[in-house]
View 1: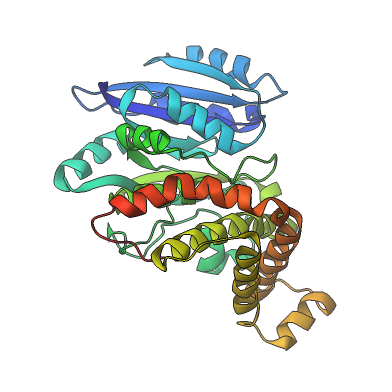
View 2: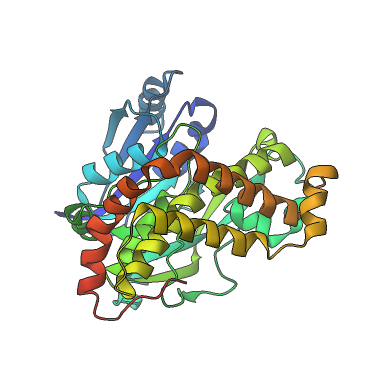
Amino acid sequence: MQLGFSIILCTYNGVSRLEPTLAHITALSIPPGYAVELVFIDNASTDDTAGFTLDTWEKLGAPFPLRVIEEKRPGKGHAVETGYDTAAKSYILTVDDDNWLDPDYLVKAVELFAAHPDVSILQGVSEAVFETAAPAWLIDPRIAKQLVIGGPFEETGYFPPNYFYVWGAGLVILREDWVTLRQCGLSFLTSKLPGKAAGEDSELGLGLTLLGRKAYYSTELKFKHFMPTGRLTWDKLKQNFEVLGYVSYYMSLYAIVVDGYQKGRAINALSAKKQLAATWLTHARALTLKQHVAYWAMPREEYYQLMLVEYYSRLKWIAKLSGNIMQDVQAIQAWVVPLLERSKVGFEWP
């Protein structure tokens, strides 16, 4: 395995977004002694994304190898797995098709790994670039985080113990850790439905945490996140939170598996469904009856309504997916339980 970075860029119909993203990648400073490749995953596109990318890469000077791989199965989870599996360098760097890396991103990553030899996961900070004026509701930092604007924490430093909610955008991990997780049987459950491009980063973060890996967030790792006007509407934001309901269903199953292992309790379909319902009720009761009524009777652009979008979406997905609940539970147990058994530091669900 060659020392260097495999930059993984997955896209679906990305022609309208890719040119500046590729331009920023070609402008990267390459640390001495490191090789770089761009692994481009065309995820069932219909707009000749692959041809556009190859032409643009050549026009930009093709400073390092580009490999274009077609992933015909729609869903970002499939694309990310294909890209990571194909990576040939020692580090994997994930870039979304609307992320513009700062020129020193790779250099800073090498410096941070050298300064923190116990770290094997790096997370950077994003600065939003708006096509037009940002809406007033984006002032709320809770909403900004959901749109991957800013950083996961206020200050540079290690992730808290057991906290595994990494952002895929700008994430740097060791390739050997991904290989280990795949050998253990990790295959994403989330982000494999068209239009549900979320959750795979949380599954990855959980796996890395169970491996005992430490994550570090640094404001020195900077990239810009382009925000087109069409994405910044309240309806689009609600759609994002509806997707979170889908992700939350699966993450609740992960929590059930961890809880069952730690308490030595067998899991069956009925017990799992009861735990799903109990978790949903706990979250739903955190908001008042007045807020629940207002959600239906008086929709407004307030954060609590977004929370209810997620809660009711999760209820929908429980009804839709729980018929196969034991199949999903067993898929999770197959790789999570062995990692829990070998964990030397222990793990508590955050």
